[in-house]
Picture 1 (cartoon, one colour):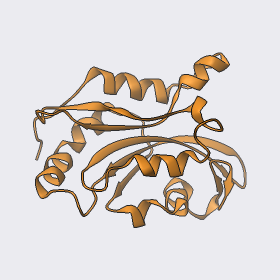
Picture 2 (cartoon, helix red, strand yellow):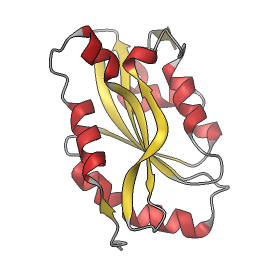
Picture 3 (cartoon, one colour):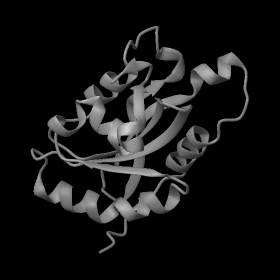
Picture 4 (tube, helix red, strand yellow):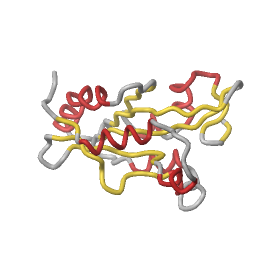
Amino acid sequence: MASGVTVSDEVIRVFNDMKVRKSSSSDEVKKRKKAVLFCLSDDKKKIVVEEGKQILVGDIGDSVDDPYACFVKLLPLNDCRYGLYDATYETKESKKEDLVFIFWAPEGAPLKSKMIYASSKDAIKKKFTGIKHEWQVNGLDDIQDRTTLAEKLGGNVVVSLEGRPL
């Protein structure tokens, strides 16, 4: 069931900026988003970029030590969100970067919120073409342990995530 919720142009622009890794100056790379959260607008009619809920590549090593742990802390404990996380990981063969689409629906979220986010998920996913990894998360227990994300990215072949061994 579709909810009739639309996706704002800014959400699509943020996705395209994260997806396209063109060679750019180090200043441009620092401004690239490592992670971002999306929420419903106040009138529940649009999916928008959530103000202040992002991690920039340039923050890593400066104000952000562990980007994955920092991303987990951005998630609200009592409401749903959509997220994009640009995961950097290594397998035994190579280094990789993949965008992960996350649907955050914690058990503590109101039922109405869970329903509208669930029924609007297809609207945002249709705009995010080429996403290989989708992850529905229902609580901190599911997301705090980085090995769960590693399993989503490549099963047991992933040896490190964000430069940290698993």
